[in-house]
Length: 145
Image (cartoon, rainbow, N blue to C red; front, top):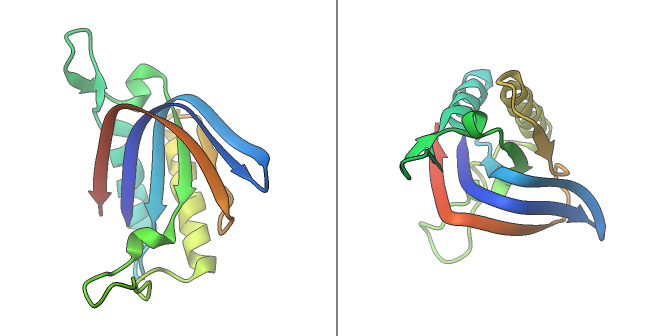
């Protein structure tokens, strides 16, 4: 599994012009699920996302997690994170998990994050989503489990 984690404010997701999800403060997480990923990877990446210390404490150091600051997570499935551009200029997505299994693992990751007491908003799996994102920092971390 691969995740792009961004610290954000005022982030929203729409499909066909209709607002689906929004958060005021927290993390936008783009999640790519690869073939062979399973429950163990979903557990590990959810733990990492929930506990990643990328919010500033009173001393100005990145020392607090999304849980610590009471932030939300906007979780977006993004198979394009599994793209391989090592041969030519057109990405190959052959390492991305098939949709049915990927959706189940995406839902499991959301469930695990909620288990840490985090409010999780989601995108539409497989949907043509439009995301309006106001990055904070900017702070962007790439996790690969």
